[in-house]
Each structure stands twice: as structure tokens, then as C-alpha cells.
Image 1 (cartoon, helix red, strand yellow):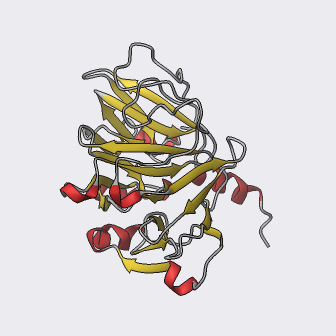
Image 2 (spheres, rainbow, N blue to C red; image 1 turned 45 degrees about the vertical axis):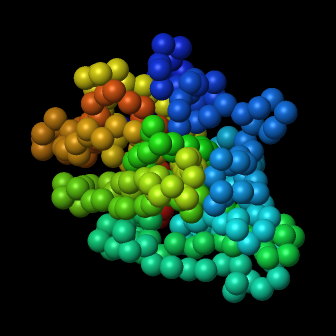
Length: 288
């Protein structure tokens, strides 16, 4: 169930802002005209100063270009997402790998499709010379930046969509029992802004999709059903994973498991399903 069409913006949507995906969305802030629209410098966060991040590439094949200046500048990424790193003095000091203790149980299930047991932290140089990192997901697609604030401190991200975040973001994976039978292993990562006073008032998360990213704003009690392999992120906590209209329809209709969201809130989702794409290719590979 990969063909879902919605408008990209909703002028009456109180959660969306001028942005390529949503208008007036507190999770995707407006940028100054003097700055690149994909550049983020968090001046309000003392732990994330001198961090420059750009989303580079065509909308269906993007990568994250990061510049860290000074040893107080740090950024966290999922394991296995680094394309390249340059400008380092000592590579082993510039990159540290730690276990994500908040995500151990979820990561055991998501080891093949989600946020792993380990996260990489990239650290800027003490001499304040720039350290450059390029990150991307394994599959071609679009990247979106979501900003968490004190007023909007939590968001759910599909585990295989998570790419990177600031150090003041805490990640916890969650697996619904029904999702273990899902073809795409529906696992979400809860990203939360740390509440300590010295952690700053905002933090960013970068998520990626397979194909382009679309969005849909749901009003209160409005429902939306999505293929279980398409979710990128959502700020809706009320959702359920279930079979598409019962066992008969889910098998004969070919839809399998679906995810139902109930508003208010925003759902960001991929234009393509990676599992469906893989299955289509596998179907055309000659068997011996």
C-alpha cells in the first residue's frame, strides 16, 4: 500500500511553518534569508555551538554535511551512517562509540532495520580547526530536519529513518508486539529533549526516507492509515499497528500490517516502501 497522496502544506495547520514540507511547524523552524535554508547553527544551546549542518543533494538522494568547530561541538549518529570524515587530527579521538543503554531491548529487534545498540559521537578538535563529516542512509532518499523544543520535547521516528541528532537528544527504541510479525518490523524510536538546564532549549534530529518525504496534518480525532513501511516521523502518540481489515483482506489484498494514527498532529512518511521495492526486485531475479 504505497500510493498515498496528500497536499504537502496546510495553511490552516497551527503546527506547520514555511518550509518545503510544512508551514509553521514548530519542529521545522524558519531560517534567516541570509543563511542557507538547510544550515543549522544552534546559538541557544551551549552544548551545540559552532555546528554547521547542510542537507546536500537532489531531493531523492541527499546526504548530511556537518562541520564541527571546537571540542565542545559534538553530534551523534546511528552506527554505519558515515560516508567520510576529514580534517581530523586523531581519528580515534574524533569519533567515540557508545552503547545506547536506553535502547537495548528495542535495538535487539531493530539490529537489522533500525537504530542499533551503538551510536557514534563525532567530537570537534581542541585547536578549533574544522572537522568535516558526511552522513547518509544506506538507501537513496530525502533528509528532513526536526527541531525539539521545551514546548515540543518529544517525537517518534521510524528506527530505520534515524540519521543523526544533537547530543541533548535522548533516544529510546520501542517495539509493539504486533509489529514483530510485520514485514518491515515496525519499530519506532522516541526522541526526547533532555530536561537539564545546561542542555539548552532546543535540539535537532535528522531523519531520512526511501524516496521523497511527504507530510499530513491531522486534526483532532482525524484518522490516517499508513503502510507499516512508510513512516518517517510523527508527533502523534496515539497510534496502533494492526492487520489491514482482518486476516483475509490483509493476505488477499496484499497490504499486510498497517499503522493507524489519530490526530491531532503531523505524520511524515516516505513516498516509497523499501521492503516492497526489495520484494519487487527479488521477484524478477532468475532462480537457479
